[in-house]
Image 1 (cartoon, rainbow, N blue to C red):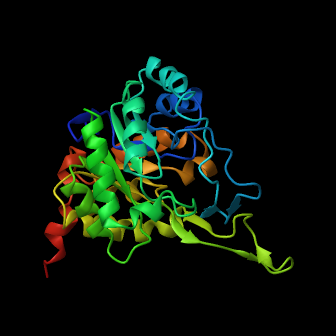
Image 2: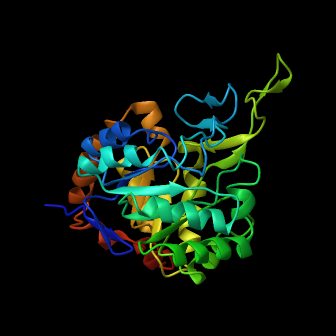
Length: 308
């Protein structure tokens, strides 16, 4: 029998498959749905201080299951309204991680404090959205601001803090180190890769915002490389994100150094039942490989990388 349980920042999860922020977590019922489908944890939509409508349509372009381009603009109902959605998920027994975004360290800290009061088990800091002016990666690409935000949030809450790191930087592990040095309990890597598409007939960008973020299987090699490099530079746990659609994808991230993974775009393509499929396929695959626990694989790729 394969034991799929994993521990991240002192929190036990029933399996390493988490719902990623931004795809399915706008309502309590959707978070509950992911949990009921087999997710080991669910991350809320990124929540801000005030309601935000996001960008006008078109906001999404899909590419036949290899990827999705989006510029949503962080739409959310605001921190005053969202706690009731978290309560729906928590009442169903879900392990909920609250995602927040802000314009500076003070706003992040205030939001994290209010989010922590809802009963979430950890806070994920969105330092990596590539298309929101003055937010996300505009803050997260600066190591000093990463340190300031993480340190402020750590002073404001007593639950684990996870820094979600952008891939849109020349030295991604440096950003992870900045978060670790400021007291972060874990790193999520990565968010979407900055990208765009142009309509050749209309002669303008496909997305109303212009540029956006690419997610899905197309970015899995980028996510894996970031997790691999971060693992060699930090001691805190890593949650791998980017292009996961199969059990082998999950195993690759574990071997690269992740303790858990987040699934996002695949939910949009396949539906919430992907968590049941991935859980069953992962258990079967690990048993076939002679692996008893997911922990056996965390970082194991590094131990074999120098062998010849």
